[in-house]
Image (cartoon, rainbow, N blue to C red; front, side, top):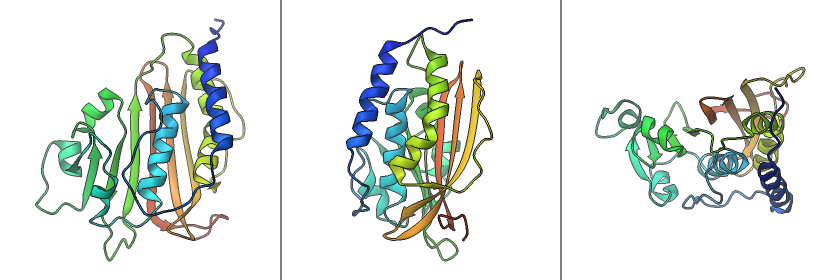
Length: 228
C-alpha cells in the first residue's frame, strides 16, 4: 500500500534541521531549571526535548541531593522512584527520585510527558545514575509510516549531534522499512567537565502504540573508543 506523503512533517524536519545546524556547541555549565524548547509532539520536536533534557540533567554533574530542585521544570514535582513506578513510598530518604509532571509513571506515559529519574551518588556509585524516559501516542492521523522511517534513519545523527556523542556499539548492518522498530545503541558522551560517560539509548517506534524513548547514563565511564 502506498504511503501518504505528509508535507507538514517535511516542513517540520527542514525547519528543525536548520535550527540544529545553527545551534551553538554544547557547554556544560552549572545545572539550571529544565525548560522544554519545543512542542512535545511525537516527532523530532519531542525527541529534541528528551535529548536536551538529558544533557541538562545527566551530563552536567553527578547526581547530588540538591540537583532535583535545581533541575525541576515548571509544572513538575519531585517524587520517589517507588511512588512514581509502583505507587508506594520506599522510605523517608529514597535512593532515587523522579521529576514527573503527574507523579505517576502510567499517567506520564498517557499524557506523553517526559520524566527524569535521578539515582543519588553513593560510595559504590560516585556519579549516581540518570535517565530520561518519554512515551507518547502519535499526534498524526496521516503520514505515520514516513515519520517512523525518517526517525529510525536519522535518530543516531540527531543524538550524536545534540550530545556530541560517539557511538561505541556496532551499528546495524542494513536498514529495512518496517511497521515496528526497536533500536538500541551505546555511546560515549562528554560529561562532568572533561570526562566521558557511557550512555544507552532505546528507541521504539510502533504504528499503534506510538513512540517511546529512554536515554540512560550508567555509572560506568567509557572512552570514545569504547574502552573503560
